[in-house]
View: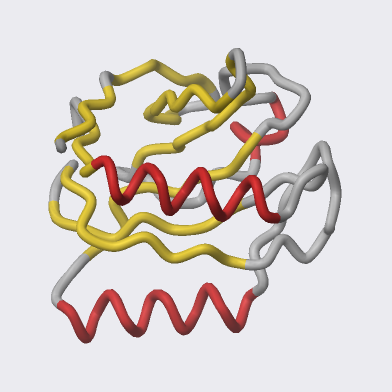
Length: 134
């Protein structure tokens, strides 16, 4: 995957989900095909922490079953960094278990959120462009 493409409505769903759980990190799955998002699934952060997340396993499994039923794949895993940074932490890198999917991180920017996407491989990461469509 070399880019992540999502509609503005998808980005708004992600922003609403992470804002709703502040000051905790919000998290969830982006379902789609290739690098294009078709569905956003917010998932409970079982850790209820402002600096770490772990998706609720049952909700994660339900989302994977839904993806299969819809003929979609996991395009990305999103989570917020309410206190920064705007890139994957060492914990994010060591706990990323979805090769071929984007790690999407939202961090504070002005009065809202900035959204960045990364590919995590071999203990490091590289940023990929995020395109927001109307």
